[in-house]
Length: 165
Image: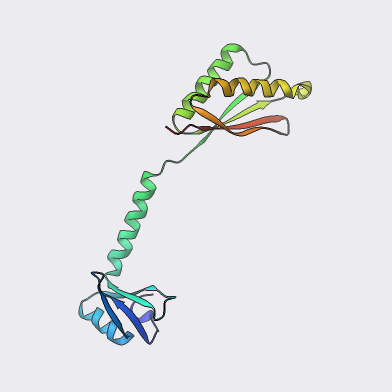
């Protein structure tokens, strides 16, 4: 709440420099704010009496937006990349998949590994677990299995997190 929106009888007032000016009526606080050509802003509504501060509200909102923008700029968005395997995968293809998984993990992304079972391959889910364990061993220096292998329909799925550098 700012300026005329504040309906309390008295408020604890803080100067724009952070100095406490004490408890006074809302009218006096408003007059003091207008005298300095600033706004009266309620910053702690639950306190008794409520705490108000004299500040430039437009500048305050601008600074908040600027800080929020800087925080967003510095955040790293973690993507989940997927590597798909089949039970009949060849050695060279498997090596290519491992190379891709390592590249994704080094970039700081999570890797979702999917082993797809087709037809009668559903009887050999243990072979899919062995394939995933082999992949976990190969990427162990850059990634840690987060979610252990789990069957979801006709797919065996595992998640690998990048190791902290």
